[in-house]
Image 1 (cartoon, one colour):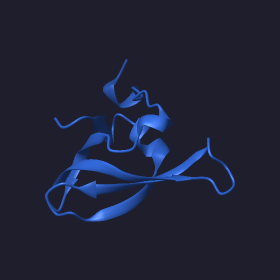
Image 2 (cartoon, rainbow, N blue to C red):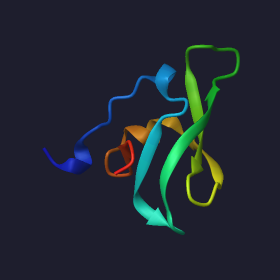
Image 3 (cartoon, rainbow, N blue to C red):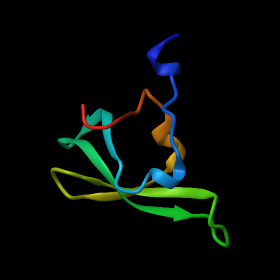
Length: 79
C-alpha cells in the first residue's frame, strides 16, 4: 500500500486541540493545532470544518476536516 493511499483515523469529537504536521511546508508553517471545530448548522454530531493555527506564525485558517484524513497532506502529531 502506498503512503499516499493511507488514511489517518480520526474521531471527530477528539479533534479539538489535536496536533498535526503538514506534509507540504509553506511559509515556514509545518506544525498546526486544531483550535476550533465547526459543526454543521443545526447538528451536534456532523462535523463540517476545523480551524487550524500554525504554531510558529500563529496564522489561522479553516479547512474541511476530511483533509486531515489524507496522509499525503497531513500527519497526526508533530513530526
